[in-house]
Length: 301
Image (cartoon, rainbow, N blue to C red):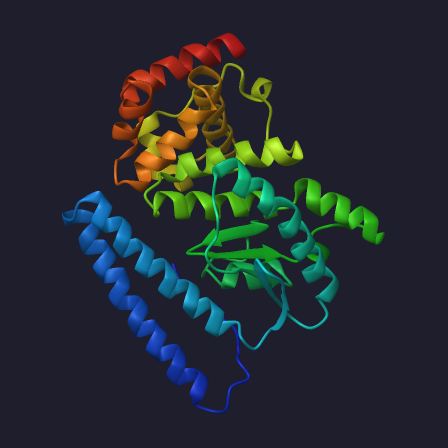
């Protein structure tokens, strides 16, 4: 996956290319190092290495977007292109509204300003990750940076109040801020399905938005937890996969209590895998936890 934004900078000839080349080299070294350590080094040490990698990637994003226009306050830097000032202000407003709530719920405090990059088109957002133009994400969190599709690119309304209502209620900011918080709390040691479940859980709690309801999947076979762990993004029914990840978090909170969610995130941050974190917090390994989830869900459907 190409993680470097395809953006033409306004640096003097040659300077931007040299700087980008330098950061590409640095990032390549970190990627190789992380790959080796993921295989050979205990979880806690991997967490420290991931922290270094993430902050290097974040620094690269700060540099590669420095030519863009900027809105700033005590917690956020919002970078955007000319013509998108209204969208940038709306993104900043949503971030200001949701961040204190997410931070409160997860007992988190950011040590640095959070970078949000507003992309004017879906193609621009997808290109920043090397994705095909057909991808339909409205927001993406990766390595300390949140990238958001401009509200004017997907909200079909001219009334500014209506645009704000739609963006705050069903836009990506609350969801992606939760991804950021989970990433920092776990030091990147979190399965994709679990971080998606947690992000949806918090988003629903704050906005009331959810991708699908429980009744939408009555009678459908669920994905095996092993499949969710290994290939979450490649599962053929992504709507089912996302819904199931949310349902698991709802089961965890309902049966084991809200504190169990915080304890699992803390255990992951200490280097435990998901199986070990579940055993430590719930007393059940992943297989027994999955069996309990299926039984609980059967009563809900």
